[in-house]
Length: 338
Picture (tube, rainbow, N blue to C red):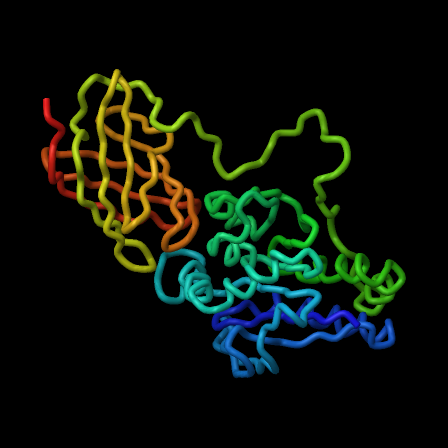
């Protein structure tokens, strides 16, 4: 018997979870109980508050990667704009900071367990560093952010990457679940469920197989040049070490920026705690310095920076995909020796 566990977390989207649940229950009915499905959480049985008007649902068990054959993670429902407590990025971040990411990481490392996401569920896993380099899809509003995490965004209704299957917007939960039923139990069971629901699965399921179309262009989160290899004037107003603060939706980050100009090129690195990363593609234009960084804390993201310097003070923004820009402020603490 196939065991399906649908993971709930506070702020989850109802349709992301309920639509697949109904499909799997119908499939079980038509396949003589060849499949079982339950709602679970990372913490165990409890009442879970959804993101739709605070409606609660009961989870019957605890997520168990050792027992599940299929684990489905829904997205969140909340404010689309802004970075407040009830915004979708904030909800996903809170879920990411539970035991859930570790459990899904354990599951996704096993080829005999299929990890499935609907809508923003892929963003939740990607923000936790689990989808780096893997093709995936999410709601169209989150595709830039998905790419910023290191995943490979594919604009399809359903993306099949072996033991990882991701679905697009909210209603794609129907399509993802029907595809899984066909893949695991066969087309006759899937067809019977479609007839019962009077719904036909939408879209071609994208898989990394077959001949590429002649106009094919790789879809990736970011295309970068050699780190630190952008030509610039011999000296800049940015040279030196800067202590900066970035005000993000998940708290303030203290980052040391070290910027130098060598042989007509800007070089830079950023240090946060024990992590130091090199600037990617720094560009100086019209007294504004821009660059990208790949960070892993507090989550895996490709951040794009844009700053200006006024004497010993630095101001600017850091942005990941469509997330609201985070304000950056800083003060120069040392200059390079001439």
